[in-house]
Amino acid sequence: MLPQGFLQRMEAQLGDQFPAYLQSLERPRAVALRFAPQKGPAPSLPFLLDPVPWEPAGHYYDPESRPGLHPYHEAGVYYLQEASAMAPVALLDPQPGERILDLCAAPGGKSTQIGGRLLGQGLLVCNEIEPKRARILSRNIERLGISNALVTNEHPAALANHLPGFFDRVLIDAPCSGEGMFRKEEAAVTDWSQKIVRMCADRQLQILASGAKMVRPGGRLVYSTCTFSPEENEQVIAAFLESHPAFVPETVDAPWFSKGENGSFRLWPHLVRGEGHFAAVLRRTGAGSVPEMSGKPEKLPKEWVDFAREMGIQLPAGRAMSFGQSLYWVPEDLPPLQGLKVVRPGLELGIVKKGRFEPAHALALWLRDCSRQISFQASAEELRQYLHGDVVPCAQKGWTLVQVDGYSLGWGKGDGNILKNHYPKGLRR
Image (cartoon, rainbow, N blue to C red; front, side, top):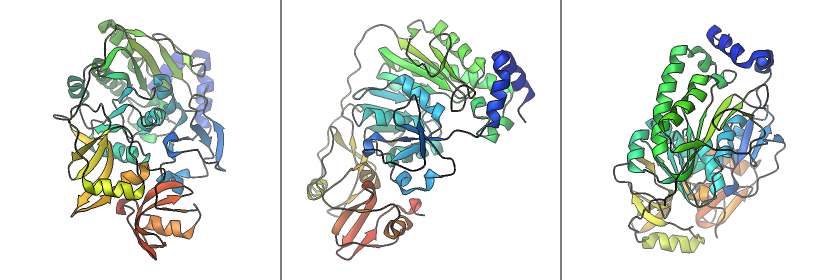
């Protein structure tokens, strides 16, 4: 049962469309996934349905198919993401080589969508204020094989003080009352109140003010929520524009969505195949250059150089960085990390251990291929054994990249007869 106060307000908002909205809540949810371009050509899967109109890599799928259990999901070939949730990144329109910030990024749907559009070029900063959710975000960045992402665990205001005017585009998918998710999440219904709506609106305006500081002159800012309330949507944007005259609404072409005022769009579940969403596209006026950032490059250790030569691995543009016990490969324009709570600074390569190199799981998920690899079919018993953590038959010797139908999954180490399993214990099934 939906809250009475919510229903009364929605009837006032929608007028003669209100019955159609109520009817849409009785229909089964449309579920979708998004392929990761960085993983290679998308496979043809029997459970795929129509494409998502606003996201070239998005597809609806048969809800009975459970693609989250498929080995391709483990390999990061796709990300399960509600179709309407793909709209804000479509409106952000990130381009390869740019600096992009996803300010409220967990669990990682929109960050991985941005990463797919950047194709390893430029810098993606993914921030999440809650530590546990930041770790989930980091794991999804790893699974999707995104090499140019910095994952931080900061308050938006602290990040703004560290990186003013640094980004070409900033996405703020703000925490909200979740009215657009009522059909999907029962907790959103039980937790709803007008007090929560007002509290969210106050917090959203603060987050928006912090995010705005990090947009360069001429850059784009997209604010989005998954709620219907005007207090959290149009009224937040109006208040922000009144107090930030450097920002103006930007006109973008998005024929799939219902256009509103101040560069805003609505996604109504009775008008699109998806849940409720709101987004507004703003531009920071003026001109200016993006601040230059340079870090001191580290020399790659001999152990890595030898391993990479043996395996035929070539890294993209970037530089080496030691972070904790691990060696990372980070984007060239990574900002200084001193004073930031960093979860992941880039692509984890691995660890030097007693004169030898042990590759990281993240490196396997990033690689498309190498000189020593073995690929199993998705239905193969050997693949099931590998994902379970068992040894599998293999004639290779040394570190070997394990794949499913050509998509990388993880590492094993062969002795010429069997492959010792190095699939992370926390991921085994």
